[in-house]
Length: 215
Ligand code: URA
Image 1 (cartoon, protein in one colour):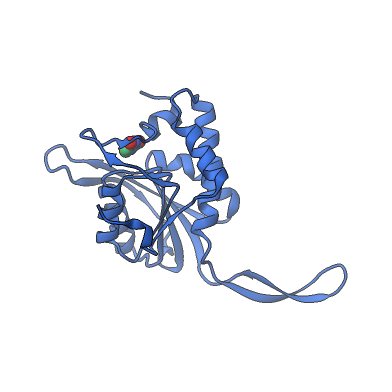
Image 2 (tube, helix red, strand yellow):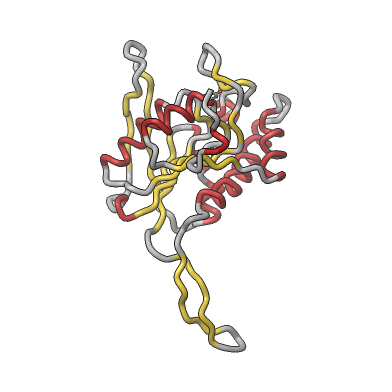
């Protein structure tokens, strides 16, 4: 398997808080409510990392004591794009960081015959080409949905894209890096493997079901 450790396009968030929260999410005894809270908290930490390269510009402001040049965000605004439905579980934490970000949604299902992702829902801001896009989906498993979603965003004009997930399988990382080498991936961990049912192992189970309490 490829050694992802030296790929500058892959960021693994090793902060102890992130790793601790991920472990709690993996634990089968964690309740739906706790899982949801942890997903939100962890997405703040992932978002912090995903937004690390946002450019700054100096502006003049006045503190209560004197005038100064101080940095503020410059350039492109943000668009968060959730891959339905589990992506919604890691959207709110990121929105806490950037409340004015626009939000897009994309829904894909897997065609049972071709096994290819088919789009069933798409709603994006008109000016997506002028925004940094952060695409969110908790689990990067095969990578097919993520790659298809990102291809669709590029078709709509997006050209600066970061992909954020809680957990990835080596296959998913390889698929996404091959399809979109320009897209940085931010994750908390790359697990051992994808099993025959498409689950990441050891993983955390079905993220959508655990977030929404469905089975
Ligand atoms: N999607 C999930 O929710 N979990 C996995 O393990 C793989 C894909």
